Image (cartoon, rainbow, N blue to C red):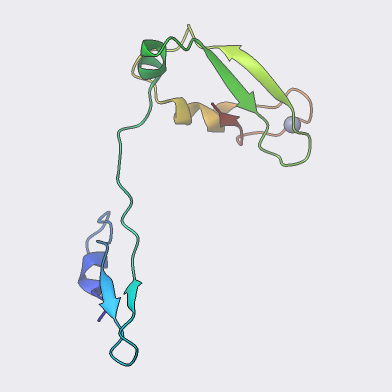
Length: 100
Ligand SMILES: [Zn+2]
């Protein structure tokens, strides 16, 4: 039986549950509960000796990429928060870069 109560809290993630189907005895995964990790920050990647960011245009058409120095960003800045702030200098696509 699916446990729908785990969806009732705002912001609560559903817990992984397994369901057994009586007819065939198969165990199914009915919800996905990914492990959560704190966001990767600029300080974290600097701690691994990484100072540059690889930025890829997210338009899906131009495939432009660039290397960007990240020394000016604060340590507590999540890297992912930059994705929506990038503008592609080739096609002009806004707010959709991938950063590695
Ligand atoms: Zn582009």
